[in-house]
Image 1 (tube, rainbow, N blue to C red):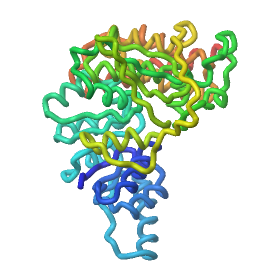
Image 2 (image 1 turned 120 degrees about the vertical axis):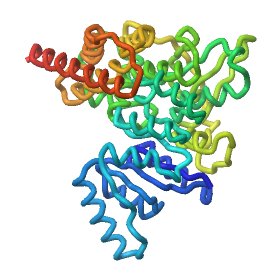
Image 3 (image 1 turned 180 degrees about the vertical axis):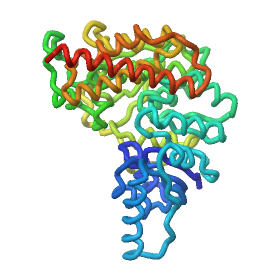
Length: 397
């Protein structure tokens, strides 16, 4: 039985991870959970999986969770309550729980970065679903992975697909990695109409049900830019060996092209439980009755190049990777601020890329040698982004 800890248990990936645990009885023990502010759901997860340690987002949430657990305990059984912590200390305690062998890193935002890094330093294997870890701190994190000799398995469906395809050959045999993108809701929208895009339109993803930020990032294709940066660190490939194509059906999750012309593709349903299970059970493949591709629905597989002028955020991500240093970290931070401003209608859709570009131009160049350096760069980029959003909001009044 593999013992796991989950960072972000009440989020979309965390909830689906627990569904995977439920579908494979006797395979996993959940020893620790880090939730956010959804104490009702956290209480349900605790009652079902009985972790020894739980962390929530705030001190107020601790009281709410304890009250919910006490009420449930009086109704159902006398099982002792878990230890309940909160904040940065709490999530790090969950990530470094002495009994956890694997940590699913799915906490939203840069909040999950220090905890994930601490887990690596403690010798935990990582199932990674938090983009910020490698986008903001890829060099620092992967150096720690190599130093500690742990595994870092990607949960994102695209990188998970590449990981599976790479099992068929050695790195020296790889010509390029091919990530697929759905194209989002604006694949066929003329550039001239993007200026008037509303949050409701941008949140209408054609294939996936995700959180608000990642859905907007899919609409701008920034999400795919982040994945290029992640792929560089996960697989040790340069930008010249990482290619992205639009594949509207999202059936092929990614491909690897080998030097002899062979191309291996990983296909599957648009269901995150499949890559989660792969990451948790690796190197074994375990039978699943929960996920399966319905071949009868396959009619065609389309592929298109990404129009650079239309998806400026994708080009900014590649440029940030080329320049390196603090720019990928700044890219992520500025995007988070700009997307939030767009969702609050303080910034137009095309303003997202404009804010990010301004931040990248103004960002001080410096080496990132530690997690503290990364967090400092993140804070500076957020400061610059807020100033830029405020300036543009005032200009539009």
